[in-house]
Image (cartoon, rainbow, N blue to C red; front, side, top):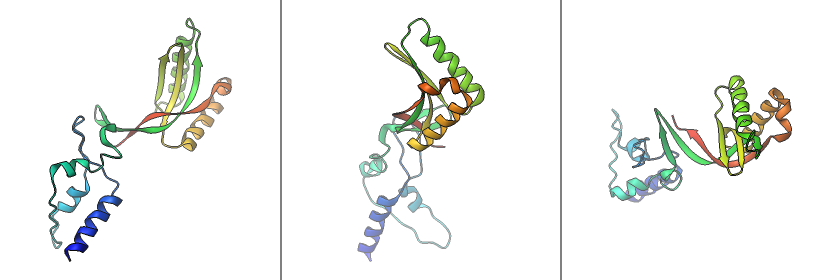
Length: 166
């Protein structure tokens, strides 16, 4: 009986898709330990004995320090995709052009995040936080349809993106 319980706990830990609390963000997400400790009428009680170090490791491999808090929203930072809309190295015009294009995109797609960055000597405008190449490609096609003049410059880039947790 005890071996079955241990096997159940191990399988649950391996198959769970929830994650733990990160020390530096203060974000608390329900873990398998919290779910197992819930007391519900008519159901048994599960007691898990392990060190705090093991409890802290739950979810650390996949999520670890990749959780970031901005205001009320927690984000998971992962490798994902964005649509690059503009890149220019003309020091006099590229910055203004990147911000102008960002403003135009924000008017049509207010819920899609945009990122203007400068990495010498290039100003870049990238759009979206997508988990898959296909999601980024769909957004890029929508952008091409809305802004046909920008279409020649657009392509998908892989970079760290922010996926909302709540």
